[in-house]
Every structure is written in structure tokens, then in C-alpha cells.
Image (cartoon, rainbow, N blue to C red; front, side, top):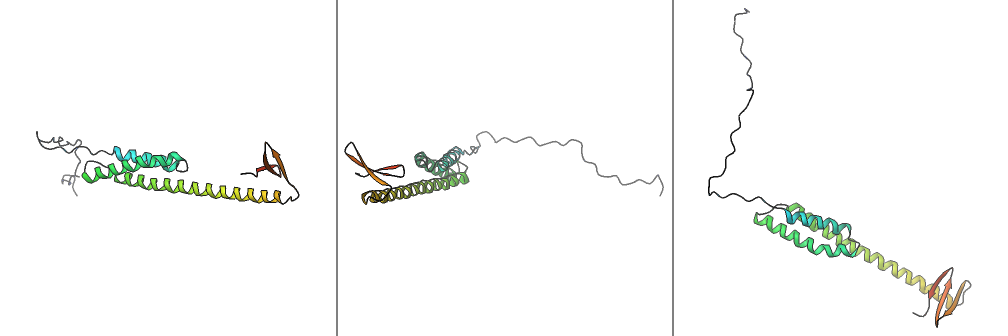
Amino acid sequence: MSENTPQPAAPQQPQFTQQAPATQPAYGAPVEAPKKKWAAVTALVLGIISALTGIFVIGSFLTIPTIIFAVIALVMVKNGTGKGKGMAIAALVLVLVAYIATFAFFQIRAANLEKSNREAREVIQKCENHEPGYYITEKDGKRYCNAGGWVYEMDK
């Protein structure tokens, strides 16, 4: 090949590209309002707090506003004026978690109370049968059962 033969040139990228200017809607044309998600965010935050505090009474009280804000968010999404459908649904799931935690807490507490009452009745029965190690004492007109360092009121 000779040096005078023209070689095909490699395509070159332009050094600078020009972007088209952003077009603005014509005067009087409807502009879509930005979609808001304040209700969904509020519902999600309240849902998280209620789920974390579900074993306390405050967790149950927060579930009502959580449900209200989640419903508002879902209605806004349906109407096209809001975003955050997933957050609203997650908040409703967290409300369910809070209710389950509250219910479980009270069930466990009731079971423990029943167990304590049953054990107290058994100890009092042993005091009334005058079994060794179980003693009845009286103070201020009330009878008490002393057993192993524990004192149980007998006249309830």
C-alpha cells in the first residue's frame, strides 16, 4: 500500500453536545400538580411506632390515627393526587402487628396472673392443713400464711 492512499477516518464523537432547552407548558395549559405523600409517610411512621410499642397501651392508641392517615393516603392515590400506596399498606400491616402484640401481651399476663393465683391457693391450702413449714399468723385482724419466706393473705 502506498502512503498516499487515503485511509477511512474513524468516526469521531463530538466534543460537546447541546441539549434541547426544557419546554415549558403554554400559558394557560393545565399543569399536573406534584403528587404528595404526606399522609402515607405519617401513617408509616405512626405504624412503626405503634408496632414497636404494641405491648404497651400507647401502641393501641396510635393505631387509630395510623388507620386514618393510611386511608387518607389510599384515597389520595386512588384520586391521583397522592403517592405512597405501598407505605399506606405497610402502615396497615404494622397496625395489625401492633394489635397482635397487644393481644399476646395481655394473654401472657393473664396466664401468669392465673398461675400466681393458683400457686397462692395451693400454699394457703397447705397452711390450713397445718403442713410442716407452713404457718398461719394474724395481724390487724387478718390471717396470713407464711411459707418459705413468702407471705400470702388468706382472708381475700
